[in-house]
View 1: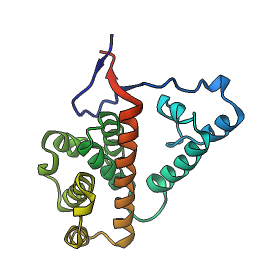
View 2: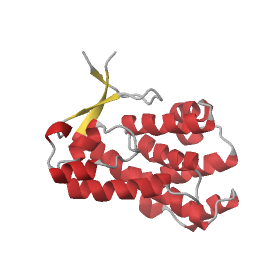
View 3: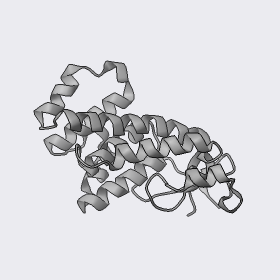
Length: 192
């Protein structure tokens, strides 16, 4: 028996779709083509198989996702993951928060930052740069029109350059969109 999850965790839950995923073995040519490159270049998740119902949108989305999250240069990978977590926490997307917190932890080799974020949100006790990135990502996710030059300056003050600020903005806003899509297409569940 499975139960819906309502608490943030770095343990990645199962995602249960509300829409039947495309069966890869029975996928049409356009769907198979769109599924060649998965968002994280790993296994094809049920989420991606649901998106494969519209193969052209999936193809474009995958290219955009990979460019924002995995492009070389600019913001380092763990800080892009932090932007994704910030948006996911604000949007209460348990699944995305878990996946990207887990990736962040693997990159930095420690889980203390994510544990504190999940416990205290924007009040987490973090180093200046990490705290500024988290707070910017949360503020941008809470009310985008309220972000102003003082928010950008706070990022500059901790050493982010223009490209890093753009990368953070892109990774955060990408997950503002992805979280809402995941919420409508399915839900995280525990099999325990």
